[in-house]
Length: 250
Image (cartoon, rainbow, N blue to C red; front, top):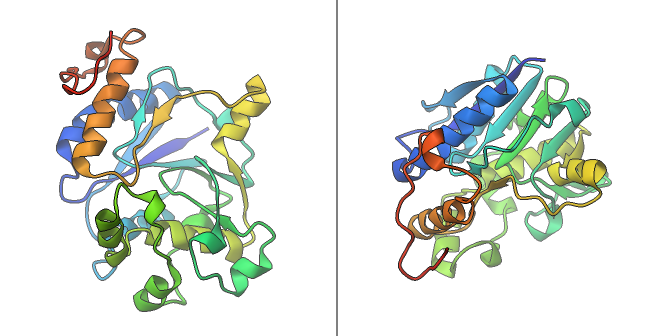
């Protein structure tokens, strides 16, 4: 079963964070037998940088194509979920409601789920690549008009405004709309945990969305310290940074 992990990194994205996350993503790729493809060049320069994720539509050639945000920290014990996945389903890290985030059109309204897709960690099979199909019937201005500000998703209102002005969530919106437009099935990664263990209280990966760079980095370090009793981080090519002063951890 062929697998490829896609990473978006244009302009050396947050090197002090990827210095931690990339060794762990590379370990995960090796563990599950996946190749890694980094998207490092612009194909859609007139669109927000997060839209470059849609290069996956043309680049993908594996049976399973996994997109992971570069600031996602994956614990070494995380394993291959694809044997438990249905190829007719696209899997996301969690779910949300489209009308709370977007101005919904006929495709959303036709869909029974009215599903909003977070695109930080996505498993897509070769059957469902329309998930990543670039938009061909909306302008950037129309897309921006259809996306609502959601202040609670962010550390503060200033960061929310900045991301909103950049149309930063264009990736989530277009994937959500594609799910509705092409009648694709979706599920939550945690539903697999539920089937296997009858609970979802598992923490194999972490991403601090909606945070400033400094806050994101700080929380990432705390996450490593929280798990240092289970893993010798140097074994995975990571030098554990000092714990931020305001935190204590034994």
